[in-house]
Image 1 (cartoon, rainbow, N blue to C red):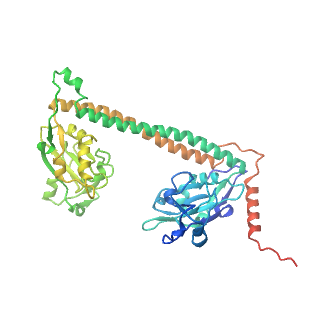
Image 2 (image 1 turned 30 degrees about the horizontal axis):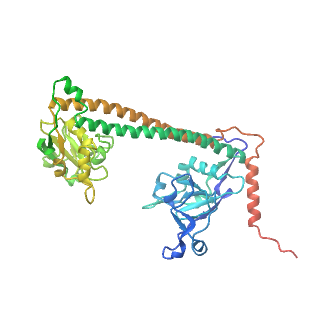
Image 3 (image 1 turned 90 degrees about the horizontal axis):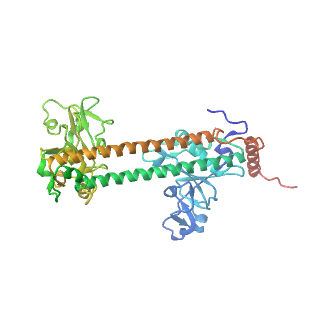
Length: 449
């Protein structure tokens, strides 16, 4: 652990703060609800400062239920939620409010900045989760005795203010940069779809046709079925053949970015003579389409020889005859104005999202000469690859921005973000005063003779 400045101290939450729990007034009592007192629940914890809540309760609810009034400026924390598996939501309430039972509020004495403590809890988020989180079957929770004993570095009061100001200024700059990066990423997404639309409307290859003396006319559309040699999907019995090593087994998660990703791959070993293996074996040039689950309609082209590989029941295998270029068809199935739109309309038309093989056969695709299909595929490959490279740079910049945030917080709570002022009252003196005040508040009053 980095050594703290001499004017700092480490202190347990129990040494300087008071936790207030929440509660839910009876929904059956209409006198408790639709009042002017904000009732904050985890669904409101979406910003660093809470200025409003979706629900409100009444004074009657405060007086006659488990709900308690929490003063403005309190630090709020989610203590029970599935999100605690990876994140600790922290906020400050800007108004007097009440809490849902899945939240706790930390009230602080004079000299301890709510903003400083909130940033400190974010800085030590993962440490708090590791030491204080209790796993459940469906949700996680925070063990309050463990949290009360958790130690945070405490700076002198004036330095707390300087640290908060510096963190917020630096984070504002980072947030501005991140916003621009996200806008650029969104623009790239629009560019991709615009490019795909132009390709299948004939505009992308207009110059190519002019150079080659090919007349421009309306493009005929055919059903994909007219050019399918083979279409199938895996059966349900593959779980019996899972193995640590063996033949590649392609599942829906391997197609989630419209590319075949083999990092998280499963393996199977089929018994000799198993006909299922022959039916669902993948070849180079096949098009794979997710037909069930969260990634439904995601599509990948098998660009390389995978050796022996099969598809699961959640993936359709489409093998084309010679009339259509597989890369041309794959790009069309990525177009939100083309094949992707048709597949999504079929998948989300009614009930649980899913595609059947007939939906794939009925996709309508514009056709052109094989030479133009190849040129469209070549142009799209080049331009979309450039867009992917740029997107990768944006993602790397976003990752660096997040790493910079963590670095700033680490510096802040090791006393290295702002300079110390020898005139500031040391944190030890502040904490001693808080301890004395709390002792006096809880000590019984003497009765005069």
